[in-house]
Image (spheres, rainbow over the protein chains, first blue to last red):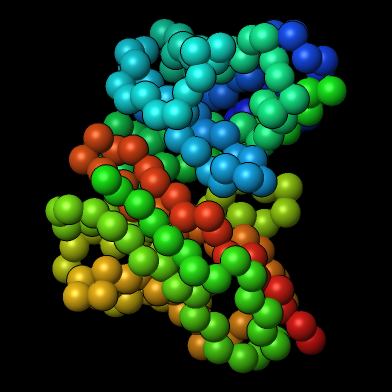
Length: 112
Length: 112
């Protein structure tokens, strides 16, 4: 168990809908990262937050947004969902300056 | 730009045989390198990391990896594979902004 908690484990929704994925980092970790894993794109970095502030942005679509709350949990919001958004979404956390990231078990999103 | 190449999409080995998974990276400075393992339905678990120093690094579960700057490689090895090692293996490089770049992964099948 990495100590990173992601909910829900599975999410099934329809095209055009909006969903929110939640991540609780390991105790004491200030940084949260979001990744998308799909069969055709592999594991892609989406965005990083550090202590509530956006720190780095990767291949994140404009339809997607994230935030990190004062208690350090993070949410990834996906809107106007398309079939191609179906993927595993992982959250990872790290202490901050440390480069080791610990991954959650992921949320599997199916857009029908 | 940073990138990671894992040339082998899928590898099959017999239980008890030795294993080597290849990883080549592209990064301008001294890289921070990682190997992660992903079991079916699970998140990514850190196997080992290289930051600096000894180029042969030991990880969990009997894995080791050797950093070779001249070949831009960071290959993962295990002397004797166990059936429980069957999983997906990811090599990653991280930049100074703590952004991870993952390879496309190597799927390992272990036959009895």
